[in-house]
Length: 142
Image (tube, rainbow, N blue to C red):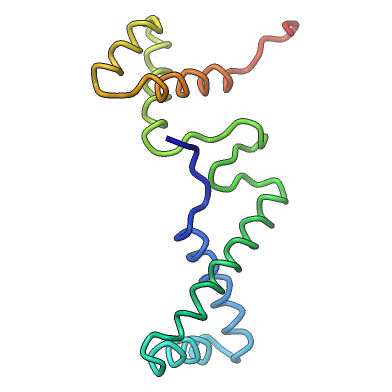
């Protein structure tokens, strides 16, 4: 499984929100803005979505890139932009590894248990790598 960044639906959702605000400002109010949007979709029997969905995607893409350029983590980025953020099931693995480490369970026992639950070796290795890379380094060590 790969690291997941903002996908199609996230970009369209963000683009819808941003473009709706702009449309409402240009139309002179919330009611007028959504009326323009609704009429452009309803009166064309949905063909207006051929215009709106790509526009929302582009606006969402541009907005998320702008937010990422400001230094805020977006989707699959961490705050330092070097360590990818594990999304979805990997979050469960990293949480499990941290809890087991706190109890003194060895990496071999953890790995065997995760494999017995159906996790793949690569997923387990990535989770261990993420836990190791996210630990703060002790001062005075390279």
